[in-house]
Length: 95
Image (cartoon, rainbow, N blue to C red; front, side):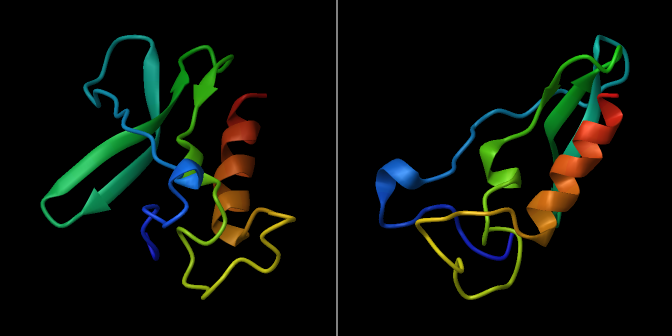
């Protein structure tokens, strides 16, 4: 992550506490992982039949995953390149 989701505007913090078991088997396939030194967490999944998917809100929140200094227009949020890539990847898998 390029920026922390812990912003001063508390109600706007795009936090998501869920992570998923990455063990094979079961009905879920990993779709998005967060990797850091010594740790890897599955935070996005899709069902094996590709009918349902889950992404954490921070995966598509502008500014968090990119190194830009600010959101272009706070009153008109739009996907940044990272969020667009993640969302399109997941939508393609749902087909």
